[in-house]
Image (cartoon, rainbow, N blue to C red; front, side, top):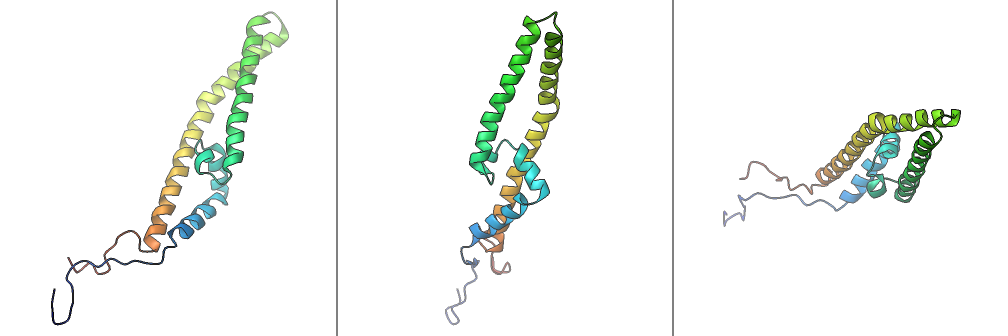
Length: 144
């Protein structure tokens, strides 16, 4: 430290107004209101925790999953108990189709959407911190 001018050679950190949350919320809202954001929020398994409509997502995930599983179980059971009937034959086809779609299409899409949703939230939080100077960036990188 130079005592004559009171200059410090230590790093100085910028402290900006604390509107990081506002910037982060705006960033996430812009994503949620886009077409891609709507699709991601619909498919993501994290929507009940971090999505824009947490209650609706929870009801949809729990209730919808229970209904789909119930339909799958109904058709699977019908295909095994009514083997020689047209309904039993059709039920086997329906239950196998539900299972194949869930495994081959829904699960990978839901996993990808969950990853995208988490990355968007992390990116928005990071950009909010950077925009307000909360990311601990030295004010003058020349002072080390």
